Amino acid sequence: DAKTTQPPSMDCAEGRAANLPCNHSTISGNEYVYWYRQIHSQGPQYIIHGLKNNETNEMASLIITEDRKSSTLILPHATLRDTAVYYCIVRPRRNRDDKIIFGKGTRLHILP
Amino acid sequence: NAGVTQTPKFRILKIGQSMTLQCTQDMNHNYMYWYRQDPGMGLKLIYYSVGAGITDKGEVPNGYNVSRSTTEDFPLRLELAAPSQTSVYFCASSYGDRAAVGNQPQHFGDGTRLSIL
Image (cartoon, rainbow over the protein chains, first blue to last red):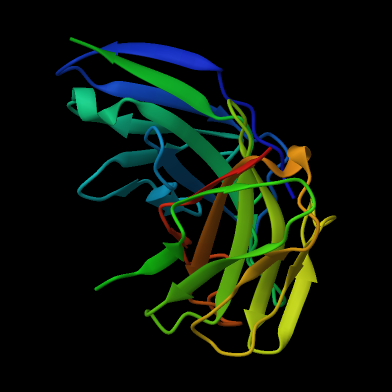
């Protein structure tokens, strides 16, 4: 599975857009980019995923570069409740299993 | 809609005791997973199951056992509790389908906080 690299921590002012980068330079053509977050003491929460096109939902936007070697998760108007650890994960399309390998993620601090 | 439900939420065990962490889901997902998360660390996969009667080891299976007799339930068993198993345990499920594998998010429970003293 492709490995991801994320900065260990980031700060963002409340109300501003939070842009979380992820490098996945060894991603292969059939691997999806997924983002999850984990708010303190809770289970991970799915945010968004994509293959090669940019995606948007009610929580966030996902921008994937044309070569697919990196992506950015965008929280358009960060609030204090967005303080969490954000995990970028690549997941292949398999016939057998669907397991996720989590890295250490980015700890995002939203500052009031 | 309950989603993934884990019980108990907290438990303290003595070294050498055994216990079963319960996980049930009501979304008719056929894929289920167990992860552990040590303080300040990411999640590590213990075991997973792609359907009733089928289980496979993850990254850190030693000291644990699982069974999957129904689609809904995926209990995790600790036979001889050790201090190294002090952790937060998360269960997750996803809709696994050969055509959709890789394209379905996992849904997580709220975790079981386990301390071994």
